[in-house]
Image 1 (cartoon, rainbow, N blue to C red):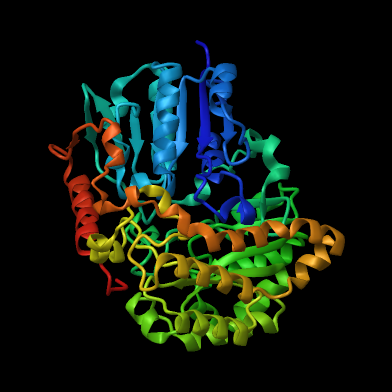
Image 2 (image 1 turned 45 degrees about the vertical axis):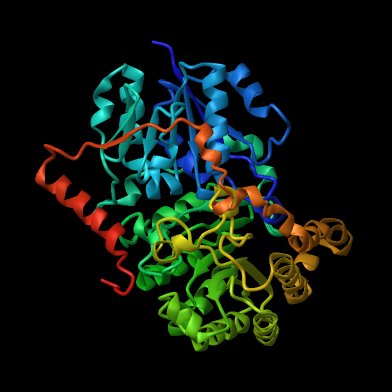
Length: 514
């Protein structure tokens, strides 16, 4: 029996997206994980990274040379229109290619992908059923339609088996190492800021926090699971790249495990440098954790500081304070770890607010300020509360670089203030100059400055016809299919799981840590 060809594809960038390729492009780890689950005697696998393959017609060329049987794409909210366009191209090339979409947006609003060009939508963690799905397809067995977390098209209708969540007792160590062979030709092209080449790794799944602006914790109903320190060190020992980006939602979500992992990394003798995400309160309450990790190779921490105002943090249900932020920054600085401070500016910002943000960043001497626009993302508490105020609801605006609600300042002034804040908040990147050398730094750094400067003229993206009240509905040129829930006659445990997930999305669980 011949092999089935699977083509994994990342969405390209939209012209409105100003930051991404100027700041980072990291490997599509999700595809490497899915590939690792499959029998290579049955499947031939390839990857097309449209973030790097930017020439016109790159997708069509790959379809023509590889002739996939199955086309798999990931989708975040900002990619939605781009993914739809790609699916249309695939089906126009060959209507027999089976199309499958997964990712962040399909876990939150899967019906947005219920178009005629989509065959399957995956609504949970891919590893939970991807192996079974592909084996069913290989065998030509329609039993795949019974898989939890899958929606499938049948006679012009999408039938949903309901979102899935991770079993809290699932042993992540039973998963194989990600299959990086499928992305090998791209390895030297992946980077994060000035770290290149860099490898992405996931050490934990989920987040125990309940921030109102975040939808990631909802995917698994707030569960937090981690791979063992032994598994992580064993995998890292197979990698050649000197830089490692841990892409967990909250790497230090389990403090006891974090200490064990730090000890394992230190004892391993791996000569690598690490970057990770952590909350400020976790660092403040565990300063010895940073001391340990700094000795093991931690060089940068991406930290969601969000604001210079305690009132704003409280409104976000952040359960942290400016005092936490300030202390965490000092702890990182004490141990030579750079702070990549993640901030959000509000659509209600005035010039005084922009100055207040700048003043705080400068006073704290934050080495890498990352400032985005507060955006009520689908699936969040803020979206539920503010969706009637959204005036730009086309997916490409949901990139955290554009205001989707009315701004207090006129939009041109808002974009100007945002651009100048980004430019003025930057500090001399001493680590980058030391790593790259002054000559290379001078030639590479303009990419960042072009990004900061481009924010100044991004007001041109706010086209009148894209406003909700314009009377223009772009989505009408797509044929959306009816969506039917298939939650009848399910076993009691599965019915209970679905009710738990549905209740979570309805009530938002904004004020609880349970």
